[in-house]
Image (cartoon, one colour):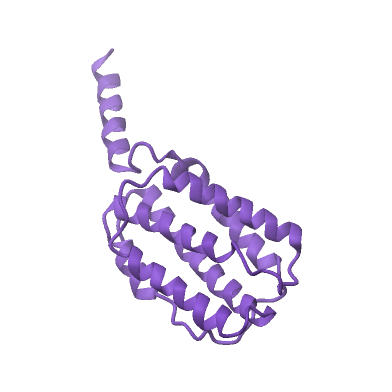
Length: 180
């Protein structure tokens, strides 16, 4: 191997070591396209996104803090976010009038994201409990208090679209290997 080739290989290895942790190739090869697919599906499976204000505040500060967290923590947060969304869409969907094919496709893609990300995570993030609490509030203050009616699910769809957009931005920062 020539000295120039050796230097190029060494630089490549150093750059790769600073990117996404080994064992988490899903973020590099599949998360982004599936994330866009999820956003498109949830936007299309209902009508226009409802303008009504959510009774639960969106956790913008938490996303900002996670954006600055170490790489492993950001990956764990991605996994926890997808897991919470998946759990929300697991039951009580009787009132929705969304396109069932698109809803089922959304659930399949969501499950795939969750399965792939789970294999990347070694330990939960310190933000996991707060994120779970946020989703619990969504379930209680929106779905439960509104008897899981169509309007409550439209509010949830609005919130989840925003979560998916923020998780997509987070995954992009992971791919770049940087904090913001």
